[in-house]
Amino acid sequence: MTAGKRLEAPHRRREQGPRILEKTAVTAYAAAVWVVAHVPPSLARWVIATGSQAGYLLWPTKRAWSNQNFGRVAGLPPDDRKVRRLALAAYREYARYLVEIMRLESLSIDEAIARVIQPDLDRIEEAWKSSPGGLIFALGHVGNNEAVAAGVANRGWPISVVADDSTFPEMFERFRRLREAWGVHVIPWRNLREIFGVLKRGEMLALLIDWGYRSDGVPVRLFGAWTTLPAGPASLAAKTNSVILPVAIRRGADGMFHVSFSPVITVPSAGPADIQRATQQIADALGATIGAAPEQWYSFKPIWPPTEEEAAELAHRADRMLAGDRSAAVPLVVAPEAPIAEPEPTSAPTPVAGPEFGGS
Image 1 (spheres, rainbow, N blue to C red):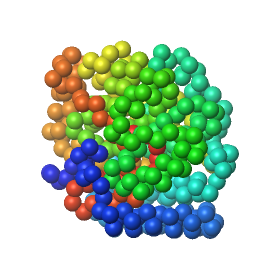
Image 2: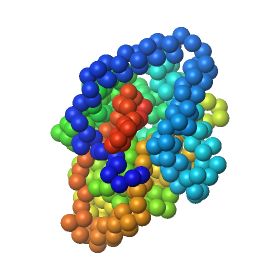
Image 3: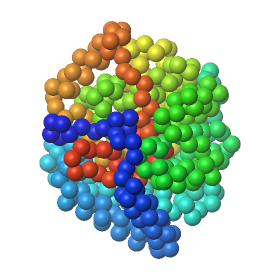
Image 4: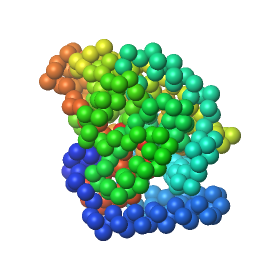
């Protein structure tokens, strides 16, 4: 990535996308949802996969970001042919995910959760009931988070997700209505009062953690290299006496979504050392999730810093945090998802993600 091209955090983006662009995106998405609901899923997957893979092949910036990410995961140079095959497979899987999301709008709640292995969700209750506060789910862009969230809500458990209402409000509202119909409460990402309220009431909160590299996040090692993850999960856990449950969702060979969990993470305090340790545990769980099914990972934004110098600075800042240096503390930003229609830019990159839930 060239100097000056940085992934902007949600709180640094423009407040709202251009109105004509939003209208076009919302109309196009609504049309796509209708088409997907009326054609065979295999045909819809093929069409979307072909378009996604063509975008990867024809868009140099997108290709470079993806190759850097999957090269890091595979332990290979970005220009290795195996990396290219892995990236193309990931875009094919992403198309499969998009078709599933689009079809959710025409399904009942029972149909929406039918492909989630229900006994896998049983372990959530134990972690939730044993928490002195709320339960924070830490998830990556893997599998189908929407169907699992619907499965949690269908059990009568109070679950909230954080979403970006600032860029494309109409798209946000469309997905809010869908999620609320399933019993999944949606919180605009800047509403920290409500986010804290959910956890202080001992409820569940879902946060996506791999939305993209930001230099002022918590420094962690992911696949052996320094990067950052958001401070939100660890900071919220410390300040509300909640616990963090890393979640892995993978599509199995049987076509079902299998859910597994890493050990519960507790955060004794909001001090920099405890925040760094907890976030590193989250990073370790995320790495295990991605490593087990890298082709199902659909985070196509830059995940690692662009230079070795910046990586070295992250390592230094991690040491300072572990030493208790409060000047190295990280601000609390609950980074949300980006709406499905948000475009990839030609100048300053911004996130592109599907309508998955949580703080991405």
